[in-house]
Length: 290
Image (cartoon, rainbow, N blue to C red; front, side, top):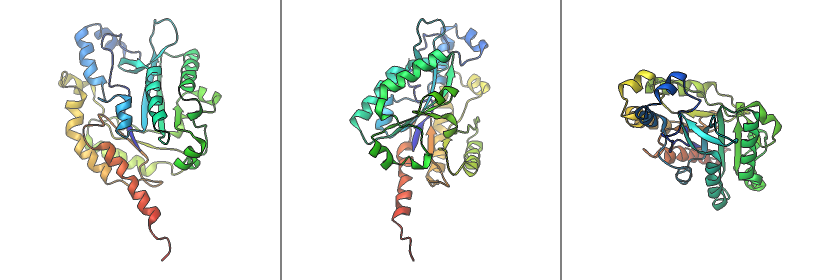
């Protein structure tokens, strides 16, 4: 399955305050509008909207959310350094696609929460339920959740919620069912070695698994390439090597499950990942008897 990293970051508001996911020093610096413009170049990891990502084959979405400190009410926004769109607007956009494509299944992974108390969480969870209702798949043994199972139940959405409140809602899957090891490196060779190692160590049963094929800028990386941004500094030049690694993978219990990337439209990333499923079909069709 193909996924996008920081899936919502195609639009961030450089006029809004810096988010609570940033260090105090960054918040102080960001009072300068030029700093916020530079932050935008490093906060944006996707060019495509949710609708465009869905149409391009993305089915796993990596989501970070936050309240806006000081704002009245409990509205929740996507966030990556700067605030993005309201979560509710994103959920509605995704649901519109699902209404038009009743056999498509998506995973929404809510894995970072900022400036949120239990009231904010309940508000967000109720929004999720309102958006998808009967499309939501209740927690089940991972191995049972096949496409056939989802189609029979008329389910289309799995929600992974990395917060203890998941226990209060049958349609929230615990975060530990969606491990996503993070290499935290700017070096593509170290990234690929990390992806290999974590695939070898992944649980074979009982969980999904995300291979994060992403490079993460250090402070010095940003300082050296201030105005170039993430895409022009790290992504463009390294994507071909990452794509070659993807082409060599095999899906299934002993291989890759979900692969995420920045700027998913820059190369044939989605098509390459989706094509790996053909290997599973070939295995199913191969004669089992000699």
